[in-house]
Image (cartoon, each protein chain N blue to C red):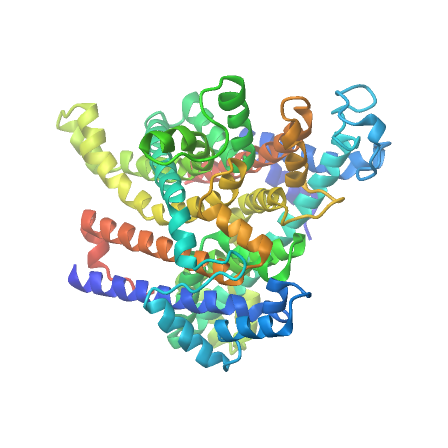
Length: 278
Length: 315
């Protein structure tokens, strides 16, 4: 229930940096959503006669080795990467926050045991876990995503645990207890909504990190499988032609960097804005 | 300090045990028969049975876990299924380039991240600080493999300064072949080090004791080096373990880009061939190195900062 007045007040509080960042991210997302609909080209249909064409009026960013339009392919790839990144992040934040809150709330041996599990999960290098998951389940976007969720939750569990431990001492949580609310109601209605806020600032940058990691896995051939391509597979496909057809690998990388800078500016603007108020 | 040391060591042992169990579960989590997946459908049943026997897959799961842990405790990593070698030999022949690459990357990340982080904190709020911060987020979003490709293109092919693939042993050879890959994996970590150091340095620079040091008329250089940096560095040390973890993971991708015959590319090959014992062994090694790095970082932090060793954490 976000009414217009509330929203405009939120935007009014944004710093210039946050606004510029939001514009960059908004532009990339809008292009990824609308571009493929307007484009006359099929992102995955090869056209051997038109392979490796320079950027022109027909193909704004040229064509790849199979004659596919690089711009259309990159925009569809952006959709895939973004969707994967957002879904992976939502899963890690949800699982991590619930586990972390439960653990802190339960205390005792449950806390001690699960905290060690979190320590272990954080100790294993991320990419190694993702690669092991691919070895277990076979290649594909889903395996890579599952691998990332398998370790990603641990960071959020640690954040949520610390947050709940300090929150537990607050008066309004104590009040819910004296009101006789059930533990489940206290946890889901009162604790978690307050815990998730610090995690969300962390999560925005994680979406980009997940997209970059998925790109790396697709580059190795373990992620998104052809003919469908995410940003990483397009960069990999352009690798043999870096000298002769630079445009293939450049555009997807530019999209990733633009998203990263945009999200970073939003984050940075928020944190400096908050400090300024204090 | 002794109590802290003891508790911290205990934590590392617990982590190591947890790691070993997780790694053990890799083979158990494979849907279907892992031996069939490794060897393919066309091999004779006797061979499948021999491999099953050798991997101990016919035993009950807890016996398997016990066998696995005792084997790991004696330092025996087992045999590869598809490379036709013991994993020890395999790892020994591949470890040198990866070890150099990780060390090289770590040094680059610390030097550049450190210098830029301190600089951004001193010039806080200026155009230079803003530029460095934007640069840092851009670095975070650049896929290391793409950076590697661009570096190879510019410094390797166009300018011919460095070879673009392969590895030459020895210090000079390692420097020639690993400089571009090390820059590629260090860049995103420069951003991580920079951001952490900048924020803690800024906090220290605003503190009263730095003001007091300035009031006593010490030179700005002395204030920065002896008073500010020393206090700002401790929170940064604790992220070094995280950085090492990223570096180890990064080698898997970057060794592939530059065709370096290291442990990272061995892991990628093992995943392609679905050679589970090799995947397990490398995951174990990688995790153990990160755990060791975390231990060293925490002890170093405790040695530098009395507050850390006095507050014995309970979780």
